[in-house]
Image 1 (spheres, each protein chain N blue to C red):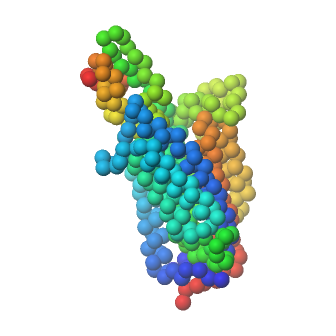
Image 2: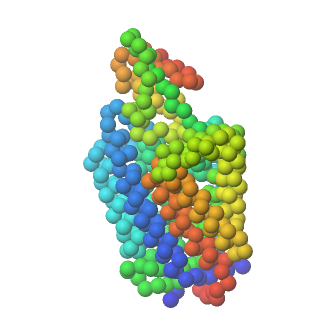
Image 3: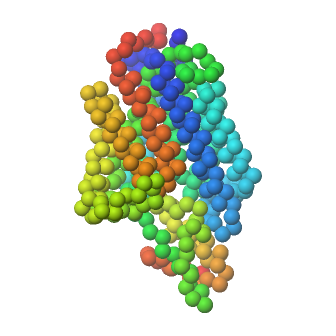
Length: 266
Length: 106
């Protein structure tokens, strides 16, 4: 049974994931730049995670964001993924430690995904640098596991009166690219929408693994993330979040496929 | 056409460690956390947050706009603890800072 962990997989779906995550990392670096620069203004609250963190200065911010962007580009291209990926992870962790306001769930997710891509040797597929080589199944499988865990917890933590009443959605569904129809902004509809969102998230956590339900799960997942991106405020950040989630979808199809596998265990 | 050769036992340990971290952290955040959102817990759009800070000065009350003093207000930041001392320092004429759930004498 242990040997099945080191069976190998075609590296191309992982390579596709790496490309999309790299693009998302570059976009995120551009989105976080104004936020980090605001921290350098005297009137704005500074809340470093650790007292020993340096105070944000424009030079520090530009350096971190510059390294982050470059790392993201190189990660997408597949150039020395172990280095470019860790640069992105390092910059993301530094930003999150620099100030509590830099944290976001999609930044945390991005850091994890990039770390897992490095672990899975994601530079071997669809890369400018290296010839395709098979990748270890167990390491690749950590990525969809990460996504399922996220869906489960984000669904379960919404089981509270604030969210289920529709109150949270009433606030969140403002300022998006598309205005949420005012005629639908009723407590009953928003509450039904909230319950639906929870059910969809928990369903996705499991259904993405099951070939029978996967097509429905893909459609629901795409619908969920597109609607969040279009109707909620903070479009740029939600685009990053959606890209990160969509990036992992090809791997779900691969880890449970019945394609012939080759054991590299000796 | 083969990549890095993992030892199956090391792979199993890595997988187990990953699951322990990935399940324990959000679970403790969900069960043991304070009210409101918790970071590292995959809590997204879970609760509504309000920003209602005011600075009381001898010449009147200043309603604080979040955009003026916070780079990004987050529900998981516990602004109640962080912002009042900052407002006292930022507004030298402030007598006290008030918000829906408390106040701080400057």
